[in-house]
Length: 108
Image (cartoon, rainbow, N blue to C red):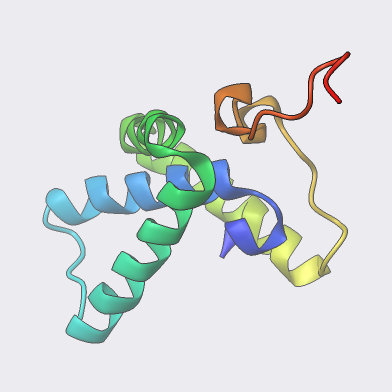
């Protein structure tokens, strides 16, 4: 999955695009796939935060099919290339609100 190569936003986008295809009646999840999918979605929500996940999900749902396929193929190429080969795009940066607050200057 794209989150496994440091691309959680891209993973959420692809899940959103897949959901749009499913809703169009072009794809049906098997029971086992559905269970795995729900676990993956939950992990992505935890990693990104609910708000960032929702933004990426909706962006994926809005992708035209040809763009979603092109993006999925590019991610597949990254996965095939192995760890350390992912390129980060601006959409893959987790918003600062998700980051834990650190010590402030002057705090002891």
